[in-house]
Image (tube, rainbow, N blue to C red; front, top):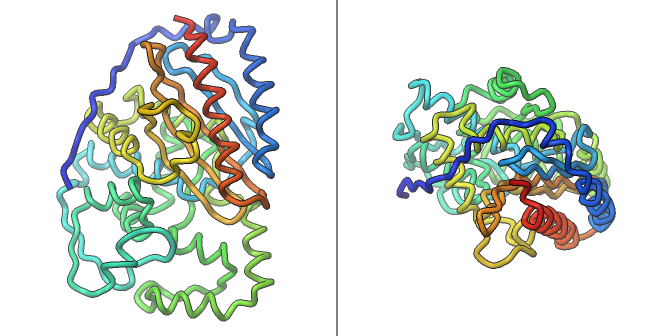
Length: 332
């Protein structure tokens, strides 16, 4: 898989607090976001931040939401931080063992479950973000120093409301109600499926419903928006690594009906989705036309009983509202 770069136009703007806070019409956008949120069928958290001016609108900005696979953005940021500091090389080859294969989304578990596979860290990173491959994610977490290292890095860069606690294997085990998960060396996808089948449906349902209030692997809309802003501005990674991460996210192959669902064709959206139980998320950076700038959009949904496709429509509506507001009110 070739490493590709998209040049990200970074406009250096002296942050003007009075300008960022002097848009009285932002209340109209916040009112619209509040009006759209019930379409999700659950609790919705939203951030919409115009990167060039700092103007922002939020809904439930300080409420924590399960990130599901959206936490892979933070994992990628920590991994690339280690690359920038010469502690890792993306060219490093990693042997994939049966115990490395995790359940859920992805390609490795479905098609590469026989011994004898080695894959570069760069390919693991891209698989994690492009198709949300869970096995790749867990190997990236390990390479990044573990979940705690990711959270510690968030604190180092001033982000308090985002935490990463588990591998995807552990997260999914908790989501379906597995207790006493065996060591990875004793586990493979078939063994995991057998553990799931042994859990009564009622217990699985209760575990899934509890996920919405689980404090682990959560973020506030404000914290996730801050992370995306810092990545875009090149504040926490080298310019090369920042551009590379944004490039991968702009090629994300999941969630076409979410942030991108109602935007004009060919709109560039660098994003990452997440889905688990009653949670459906999409977080990213939308490029506006006509040099109107870029908008970070964070859309978290939790505790929804609606079908995923309905939650996705709510996310798409939110993204379109943010897109249109900042397109017609660029503030530059």
